[in-house]
Each structure stands twice: as C-alpha cells, then as structure tokens.
Length: 595
Image 1 (cartoon, rainbow, N blue to C red):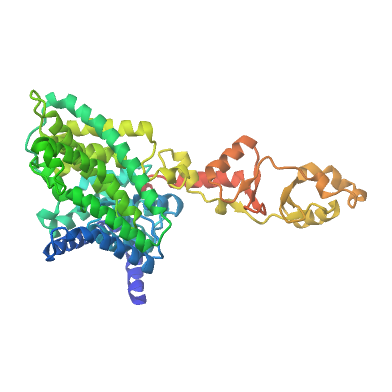
Image 2 (cartoon, rainbow, N blue to C red; image 1 turned 45 degrees about the vertical axis):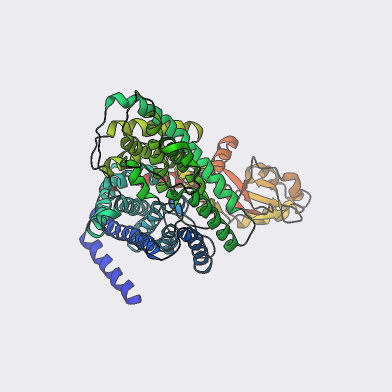
C-alpha cells in the first residue's frame, strides 16, 4: 500500500511540474468523472442483478413482499457493525462537507453508500439510488482532490465534478448532470467551473453508454409532439405539481422522523418498517423498489390495467379504477419512502419524486380525458409531471427541465417543461424557502445558501478565530496583581473570573490608565471595582452569523468567548475576523487566474 501511495505521489509531482494549474485540474476532473461514472454503473448493475435474482427465486406469489424487511435488516446490520451505527446520507451530507468541513469527505463515503443503498433498493426499499450516487461521486471527487493536493476551492469543484458524473451516468444525461452540480451543490458558480464539470459529466456518461445495457437506462420516445392548445392544462399541472411537492416533502419528513424516533431496538424497527412496506406493497405493488419499470409504462401511455390484490378498486371499473389507483400511488409514495429511510435504509428522494410526478401527470391527464370534449396526451403529461415534482421536491427546476428533455432524446417538450417546472418551484418556494433535505442544516447555518456573505461566514470556524492567549485575573485580587500581569502581557484587555472560576467581566487598559500612576493605591483598589460588563458575550457553539451580528450591534472590537459552564476561553477580534473574510473572498477568484 505504501509503495502505491509513493508511486501516486511521484506521478502527481511529475504532472504538476509538467502541466499548468488549469491543465492539472482538468486531468483530475477527467479521472473523477471516470471513477464516479464507474461507481454509478456498478451500483445500478448490482441493484439490477439483485432484483433479477429475486425474480428467479422460486417463491409463492406474495413471498417477495418480505424482501424489503430483509433489505432493511441487512442494511442496519452493516451500518451498525461496520460504520459505527449511523451514517450521514445523501445530498445534505455533501453540502455540509462543502460548508463546514472544508470540502473534505471521509474516504469511507466512496463505498459505504454503494453497499447500503444497493441492498436497501435492490431488495425493494421504496427509495432511489441517485442521492447515494451523488454522495459517492462527491466523495470520490473530494478524496482525489485531497491526494492530488488541491485547495478548498478546487476540492469543492471536484466534489461537483463527481456528482455531475454520477447523475450523468445513471440517467445518460450529461447536461442534466452539469446543471445539477451547479444548481444544487455549488451555491456560487464561476463561469470557469463549467469546463471541468462538463468534462467529468461526459466521462461519466461514457461509462454508462459503454457498459450498461439499453434496458438499464432510463429513456423514452415521444409519441406526440407539443400542442400549444394544451398550455392551460400544463399550467394547471404546474400548480398541482407544486402542491403535491409540498405534500411529498412534509409527508416524507413526518413519516421518517416519527419512525426514526421510535425508542426501540434498531433491528425490531427494521422489521416493523419492513412489515409496513409489505402492507403497502400488497395494496399498491408498483411502489416496490425504485419503480422505474412502472414509470416507463405510465410515461409511454400504455398503463391500461392495474394489479388490485384487494379487489376494492376493481369495483370502480377499469377507467375510474386506474384513476383511483394512480392517485393512491403518488399519495402513498412519500410515506413508503419515509418508512424505508426511517427504518434504517439508505436511499434518496430523487427517484421517488420522478415516480410521483409520472403518476401525478398520468392521473391528471386521465382525469381530464374523462371529459368528453378534452383529449390530451397522457404520456406527455406523465413526463412533464416528473419534471414538476422533481423541481418542487429537490428545488432544482433547471435540472428537471434538462433531465426530462435528455431522457426523451430531444427538446420537443421544452416549453411545457419550462412552464410546469417554473410554476411548481415558484409555489413551493412561497411556502418553504429551503428543500426538505437542507432546511434544518440551512436554518442552523451548516450549509451554503444563495447569500454570498453568509456563505463566507459559514465557512469560518469560531475555534479558528478564537484567541486563547489572554490572561484572566480573579475578582478578589488587587490592582497590584493586575499591574504585574500587565507588565508581562502585550494585551490591553483582560478577563475577570469569580471565585468559582466563572467569567465575571473584563478590564480594559484604557479604563485604568489614571490608576496606574498612583502606586500608593495599588493594594487598596480591587479588581472588582475596576471590572465592567462586556457589551456582549459569545458562546463557543455560536455560528459566525450571530457573532458578526453582535459585533455590529455592540460596535466592539473584542468580545469574550465562554463555554456552557461560563468558563472563559478567550477573545475574538473583529479585525481578525474581517481579515479572514477578505482572505476567503480573495480566494474565490476565477479558476484561470491560478495560471
């Protein structure tokens, strides 16, 4: 292993002396694209093999419904015994690493999501592989950047390259991969970032084109062209997609949170989750697994029959039975996904949102076609519905537009895609400023948002700004002891602590200058009499946004930092904080400036 590392180090050193900085980054981006693309292909292939194996097992008609519980149990076992009992999942993990961990993602994320999500989804968990693929591709990019000695800005770029390659490979959609990386992962984008991300995306999609079979790829052929007369119906679909997206996000989070907080053994929770999925799959079989097979039927407009194990929907007749069946499908999908994740599975909401959108579009068009004077294409509306719900759930309208355009092998539906995705996104943003996956982290200041100044402050750690080389003096001491401390110090501010060693106040040198000229008073003047309360105090777990706000409100240049026990830790200087801010701002220049 050491010899391999030494060889790689020598190769990297050789390349860095022969290539310019930009050429070197392009090379690493290409390697990231191929590596992430291969990982995406591997994950898809493993899941395909598992699902094919399930079908080949000679079991009774409904015995396959037990496989999701087996998948959840295996996933929980692997996470508990090999990954410490809990793992960070999905896109939120990547965003937090960019904002709070200097774009360093632990190397175990290059394989743990492949193992756990392939078992969860392959054995029937009602979630998707795209979020694990993004997490894995991002981890590949981060670790390649780390061993290639790239800086923070370049590591963040390589994370985006890995994610773009993964999305491009799994959907055979290179443009959507690029747009996703820029729209979701990179809060601030520089034009020069596009080229390495494009290179990675192309490398990733080449992996899927060369290795994966056509039936493994997610694509469609348009059967009807866009008709401008249907625009009013597309507007209605956009509104409906927006509200369904809100329903999806809230129902998923409520279900996941409730199950996750059950106070019980993790294995028992997985079994109960599996049994809940069994009940749902019995009533609605298309919810089993990713569901892309049934999505193809819906999007091709060929869904004419449905499996009704309860025989209840059959009583409505074929036409209204299908309408009720598809409505139940997109209403219960977020619950099934929430049960899967809450019970210990690993997966994401990218595929479920596409699934919901397809059934929503089919339901909407089928319902309208019940009216004698309306005739709209059910396949087209299913495809457009996919973009609408993906846009509203994942907060990525541009990705939704280009993804559906690419998987339909053309831009014939570009206008309705733009209409529905925009309306859905606009409606959702009115109610929720952040997506369900990032809301908690965004409110805590753990990830970047679209506000540049806040992003810079998020990337600054309070611990890095803390100056702990300040002296403190007891409140019952005299001026004489303080003078001795002043003689040995180059500081002009001192902390005062009480008898329990808790912070009591501060003494500033400017405030006691006159007293220093009266030596006869040194043993009479107490520290307590000279002490004053600071304009504000900072706690060591505060985020830098609130720290900056306190500096602005108090107009102070130094503020003390305390821990939960109110023990003095040090001071933070506004000057040092501003210098760090300027340093980060200066480092966010164009990639080509590094030449």
